[in-house]
Picture 1 (cartoon, chains in turn orange, cyan):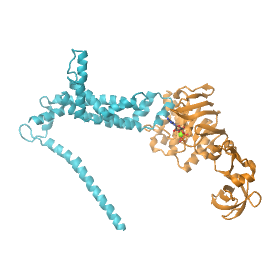
Picture 2 (picture 1 turned 90 degrees about the horizontal axis):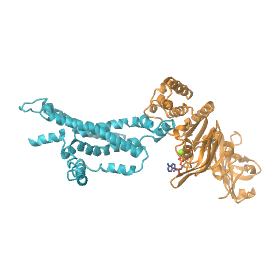
Picture 3 (picture 1 turned 60 degrees about the horizontal axis):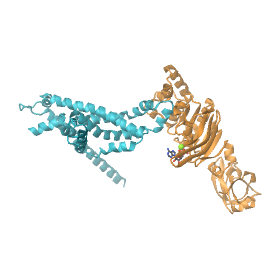
Length: 328
Length: 245
Ligand SMILES: Nc1ncnc2c1ncn2[C@@H]1O[C@H](COP(=O)(O)OP(=O)(O)OP(=O)(O)O)[C@@H](O)[C@H]1O
Ligand SMILES: [Mg+2]
């Protein structure tokens, strides 16, 4: 559907993107994930046409669109700030793209009302000024405005980051439901790893203008290809000193293990003492002192085996769960 | 303790209220009342109080032509200032053009000159013995050396004087626009001009309206440019009449 081939983008001397390759398949929910300033928005803007790459090409459905102007690309966008037109009503905001396409009044009305119903906007809300809507409602208007012209693909740049945590989770689920319902190819930008893992079919992890890894959420999480990805996604322990040597691990590499992959038991493995405990209900997080270092461990809360600070435990590490990267 | 803070807050409130009333009455209500009173109690030529004396003054003799001249200046100024101001702001802020910075600087420097200094500056350039006039006269010996006077000269000078204020406010308004809305409109298929008229301009309308009113009043009350460049508008005439007594 969308293919980026060896894209480079420069702002003056600053190389914002280096050799970016992305392949988004039809109907996929594809996420660009990475820390602030790593080039996610820049990549998205290259796809939508606001930025022309200094090298490389953009393909859409097999056609080279690298130099096709923005308005001819048929790509919908949902902005982080929503970018609704402040002087128009909700209805006129959604109808804007259709008016430009010179559809007749009845057709516009039918399309606007159909899409509004799909994103849960009432007739009453359609007549309001955009400033009278809540953040979540404005976001739905932005999505409706982007979808009403039936684009081949929709791009969303951190569409949930202006909302509070609870609403974010709620709208995240709605977003996924809508995407399945419309079956529309979606490119999604976020710096929130949880959002990326729960929503995506495929994720590209960005860092300093390059893609570190592309894969399914499980690939990214359980088979992180680089140290950066391993650290950026989820929490992780870096194994040190005594543990690495007793496990016979290569000391030219850094070794990591996820919190939930370490088990706490009564025998085997390493001996340790519970340093402290954080009780989350669903699970319990322990800080276990193994002599050499403190390991973070997550245990399912089974209601029976709950350890207190000072308890002596055994820490069991399965060598297969260790992710190793060359020291650089 | 509680009693104390209440007292302090109360005193501050009273003080604020008194200050506000003083400013409001002293600088807004009283001057207006004063003006209105003197308008309706002015003595006419016969020496008796006539409520319509001031209105009659504007209709007597050659006065209507001065009033008309002022109105003409104000209306024309509104048009020229809006046209020049909007173009300047759009050229330097909205469209990407080369040399925008220099253009902007040029306009903004007129902000530091007061009216008289500005007109004197223009006269230095364009007057009968001005630099530009002298230079032009050398090339075209038969040209009219007094070309820079009257209505057109006043309109020209005042347009540039007023545009800097106009552009200053308009520039802030245009910078306040969420640029993503422009991009969103472009993305939905609108041409740059369509975006300008359906997205950018409506947002600027309130600012443009106040600027138009401001410019109109400036034109109506113009003093230095008409006086120095010889244009018979009402304000210089009122001063002349007052001084001539
Ligand atoms: N128009 C521009 N001119 C110069 N530098 C730019 C421009 N746009 C972006 N950059 C730089 O390019 C880099 C990548 O920016 P980008 O906006 O793509 O980051 P991002 O990954 O979207 O970050 P965030 O999560 O903060 O939105 C940043 O270092 C930024 O400073
Ligand atoms: Mg961004």
